[in-house]
Every structure is written in C-alpha cells, then in structure tokens.
Amino acid sequence: MSDEDDLEDFEPDLDGLEREDDDEKETEEWEDYRKEGEDSEGWMSTPLTEDMMKEGLSALCKTGSGLAHAYVKLEVKDRELTDIYLLRSYIHLRYVDVSENHLTDLSPLNYLTHLLWLKADGNRLRSAGLNELPYLQIASFAYNQITDTEGISHPRLASLDLKGNHIHMVTGLDPQKLISLHTLELRGNQLNSTLGINLPKLKNLFLAQNLLKKVEGLENLSNLTTLHLRDNQIETLSGFSKEMKSLQYLNLRGNMVADLGELAKLRDLPKLRALVLLDNPCTDENDYRQEALVQVAHLERLDKDLYEEEERAEAGATRQRVKEAQEAEPEPELGPDPSSI
Image 1: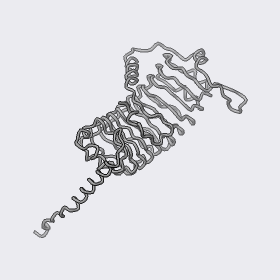
Image 2 (image 1 turned 180 degrees about the vertical axis):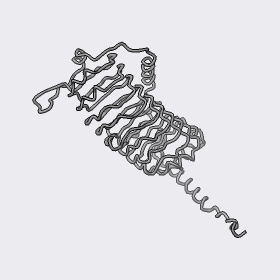
Image 3 (image 1 turned 135 degrees about the horizontal axis):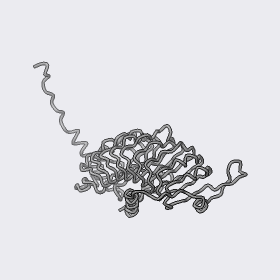
Image 4 (image 1 turned 90 degrees about the horizontal axis):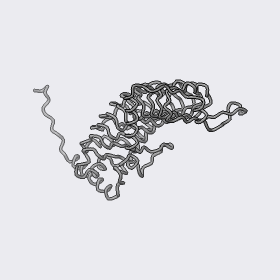
C-alpha cells in the first residue's frame, strides 16, 4: 500500500504540493542507479556542449527592457554530464533540469540569478549548497550523495527536496533566510534526530524511511499541517507540542509504537484530524481503533477509515466512565510528618 493510499480522502492545504506516493518500484530503480554510480571507479569526462544546449533549450521570453529575447528553459537529463561550466554564460535561464547525470559540482548555477526552478536529481552531488539565488522557488536534489543541509539560503525557496541522500543531521537551515520554505522532503536519508528543523513557516515535512526513534525540536512549527514519519523506529510519542497547533495529518505507519497509552500525548494537537498507525505493534491490541479515539477525541480518521457517529458515542461513554472512576477514587492518606517523629 502506498502513502498516496494513506492520504486518500484527506487533503489539508498543501499549496499545490503533489501528494507523496512512495512508489517502491521507482525507489528500487533509483537505488540501483545510485549504487551503479557509487561502485564505478570514475566517469568519462562529459562536459555540457553548445550542441546539447541547442537541443535542450526552449521557452523563448523577453528579457530586461523587453527589447531582447532569450531562452529561459533548459533540459539536459540523462546525458552522462560531468561538467556544466557552460551554463555560466546563460544567465537568463529560469528553469533548469540536469537530472540523471554524473555531476559533482553545481557552482556554475551561481551565475543564474534569474533561476526559479531547479531539478538536479540522480547525480553524484555531495552538497546542495549554492550562493543565494534571489528568485529560486523550487529545488530538488533527490537521490544524490549529499551528507548535510548546509549552504541553502534562498529567500523565496518554497519547496526543497533532499530525499534519498545520506544526511544524518539537519544543520544550517536558517529560518531568517529561508523565509518562504513551506515544504521540506527528507525521506530516505539517515536522520537519527529531528533537531535542526526550526522553520516556523514550514507546512509539510516528510521524514519517512529514516532512523528516527522520537520526535524532538519541532515545537516552533506552528504552521505545520502535514508530518510524515512512516518507516522509522519511533517508540514514544513524546515531543509533540501544543504549539504545533496547525498539524492535521500525522503518518506514523511502520514504526514501533507498542503502547496505546502513548496516543494520549497527541491530545494537545488541536487540529489533528487524520492519524496513520498501520504496521505498529499497538495495532494488534483489542479495540485498537476504539482506544485511539478514546485517547484523541477530535480524530476524524484512523488509517484509511473515517470514524462513524456510533464509534464516537461509544468512545465518549468510555471517557466518561474513566473520568467518573478517577473522581471516585479516595484521596491517598498522608503519612505522619517526619519532622514530628
């Protein structure tokens, strides 16, 4: 079952973001591609040429005062490129796709100060760092060999895709510089902590397929609506804060939550409507579905199924019985004051 299935019937405000589909076949193909690149002793030097540029350029637009024209879109995918130095001269480019090549250096892109959209997936990059590009809005560096998140400081960047890399820790993402970032994709890395993701404007955070055991340091994500944590090693639900007041969709599928009592820690998320807990040990408990609603009364959907009114009424009755039982318990008697003995 795909994550797209998990998200079915639930569409928070994703500002046009395509829903994650976790296509396993595609992932395997990318892994094979990357392994082939890592095992190779070296690629034959293949620089970008004028002929390749002529084939890949499109979208003729006005520039400057409107009296001149230039091509603003370039696609040079899967050309075995090792060098894009030639791009330094094409300063009017706005859309660039250099995916599925053998690139280790993107520094020529620093000259493209009009760049709006960049896709550099499936290369051999070890860094996503570039000079600040004032108009860059969408950037994808998926399935490279990137080890950190340093050097990313584009003020209009809205969507950043770093899935399928080798990132252990998020560092260098400055909220004072990344003032427009609303979607961060870090699926399939080697993250062992959620520290360092201090981006208050963030709306969508994808952290599936990492090495996470808990959530921490996300208290300032007051605008976050979607949090994807599928296929990690999470056992405890500590770390969710009432300051995460916009969170609507939480995917914890394929983790290690064994105690249904942990769900009580999600009560402080006032807008949580959809929760995915499939493939956690706690789903084997009797009345798992009912107990989840007892713990989090405002849930609308668990896994793929909406809660019915009958289920809500039964959960409400259970909560009332628990409350009455707690109130009926006698106060524990205080022992003698040790100072008086």
